Image (cartoon, rainbow, N blue to C red; front, side, top):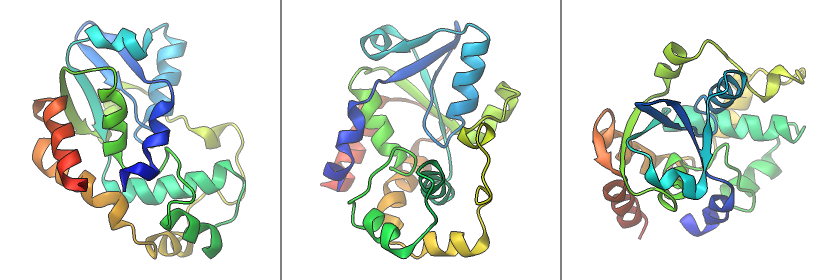
Length: 195
């Protein structure tokens, strides 16, 4: 299953050095836009790829997997200026369309693991609201009439076999939320779950 998503891990890996004691790995649909824009506006360093190796304790904000999947698919349609239709949804369901907005958060952890082997702390994405005052996203620059997710659109997205996008994340969340854990331990569990 991960073979469909692994090509998404070739992008640049970034961690925000928010303070001496707080390094944040921002994930799409988990406050990433707000965090990175805030960092840029406040001259907070963002380290990339091999620069991440020497960091200590990285915080990763995690979102409820189903909520994130629905929002991520909706964002994919928005960014590509598409209306939600069954044909495109079927391509998502069959992995013919993959996108970092709705790929499991576990894939993001695999991406980080390419450059970092230390401890991570998984925290609820709601904590981002306490950290930065921004609520930025791609929709703030170019609003369109279909930006608001309707109940009908949500039901269309939920008609997909979303569990293949969410189950692995629920397993990780239930075991590791709010605990300092070696990233390697989480990665081993992810790999065992999909093998």
